[in-house]
Length: 156
Length: 208
Image 1 (cartoon, helix red, strand yellow):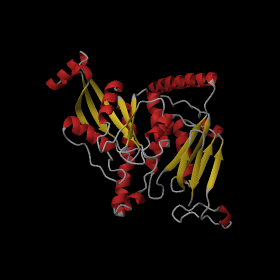
Image 2: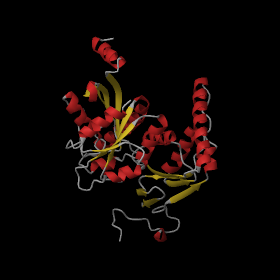
Image 3: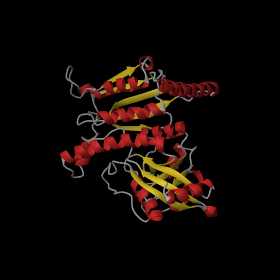
Image 4: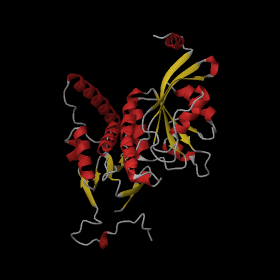
């Protein structure tokens, strides 16, 4: 039996209509996120997560975007929002696709630099293949990750 | 240019001395400041920062300039040593109150800690080499570690993984080796000084 401290959410006991003990999980298509620039994407994701929703999407952020997510999270931390838990699984692409992904990454970096120098808006760079879960840390108690899977322990 | 700076430049120019900005990065409470203190004590004779069991003790970047490590062949490595605040995706002031800190002080500490994380991220663009410190008693496959390693790789920054706390019974540095097989890994105990010479050798070898 789970201890009171690490109580796992039992949705079957939730009274219909009550907000207490409800946990919202939103599955969002990466198409929605890919239409946004990296900065806008981070803000969009955090708006959802700060509202108490666990977000799952079929894509993975690039490393520098993940850092941007951590940075923006830190800016938004307050008494009611201590931060996020995030976990992603990147899909290993076969040889040729992996090569093209690397070429695309380099092209994006050059484009990004040129746009910065020209004072233009950064280009929209899509998420990589994979899966990401981002949720408020006050609900996600623990994430256990293996190279090919992760388990999420959540509770109110 | 001061006379000391001029001699540093001259020795670097004739390859007898190498100057490197070395950032110590990692999650909260993995022993970054303990390691920074050990390196600084060994080669500069003084500590860099205060350690504590309370998370986020280091909330601003601690700097120690001109820490000189002798290398094989009579060469020297001059380090600008940077002890970074711990990286985290969450900072909850309530966690500090469990250590007896009052709520008001805990909130202030949390605010400083979030600023520290942002500062540590910003410094990633200004370091030459990174010691990525991981706690050998814990699961290394955390998102913070993966994000840190991903960014170092993307930026082309040389990194040495330091598997710390091997003096503890539950330490298992092999888990870190299995999780990050493509990087040099040095198991150490910063607290006890165990294997620290291996780390200095690795710094001499990989720091650029």
